[in-house]
Image (cartoon, rainbow over all chains, first blue to last red; front, side, top):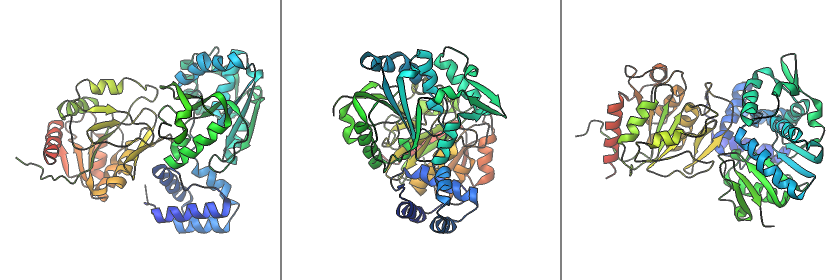
Length: 274
Length: 197
């Protein structure tokens, strides 16, 4: 809020990041993108010219830039009703036809939803039958996700969500407290492959029965949302499921008619047409 | 009888409120006609995990349609838009909303500052900003931003507020065009409505 970054400067920065490093932020939603850029300038005490210079002259800075730019706010069992729906309807639906199946967490951030998913699967007794890919653009945050440890101060929210999810245990049974962190049992990541993947420019890399991409596409404009939905369509088996954030929509995307709504409240869709 | 000397150049009304603002919002909604000529965009602090009930509660006495917009939803006049639970709500150039799950701002999501700043940027001098009762300073910087872009600023009279921290924050940060009680805010909105007849 200190300085109002100019759209022209924003464009210059996105152009450099694209041309020099191959990341494309040109179709990000403007208001949140602008706030993130302003935050970086404040955090680093830079002007937009100085940031541009830094991006041009210090290739090593790009990873830190991506880490600061991307929004990495997430919770375990965010929207408990969604996780109950997965447990009670969506996953039993997948199990009708497949004993083993694959899940993609697209834009997994620090991994809270990956851990949530495996707690859910473990409590259903099917964790060993499920393979999970968790991807993000930001390598720094992937390292955090792999560590499966979170600040203890975040656990109050996570535990409240878990109680609303009506899990079988106490969430505390899944982690130990070490140096102010909640360190989750490593077993909860044994079926997970983390990898760097760019939703904007990356290719489809596998086929899935369920894709979770919750509150990621809200940072994109409609042009980009449309393209990403095509990628998800191509990455789903027929009758596979896509879950997006509760206030997101795909209704204006070209491929929306290749999906049906399974649950409008929790925004779960099913691919019905190739 | 014109009290506020308004015209029909405005494109939107944005309202921020927190603790103690619910009764005022209900009163305002009960008086605004269904065909109000502008969108009304509201960021009100609310419990993050309670997704339901707020729209229903606000709808009881309202002639306006009340909507929690989805991401990228177009903005239409005559609709009262409420920032959904646990999302920040911004207005984009091109007259649509975008939502976000960025960190809490002023300990809040939705944050009033985020909604006010983005509407100020999108509507500039064609915006009316109203800040009601509240217990923290969220919205103060947003009102400053509206003023700087040439918009019209109103705060609820601190004497009428259940908790006056929020309007006082705005009053200390920028020049506020009108300090009004809820009855006067309703008169203002009715006069604004008349400009578009």
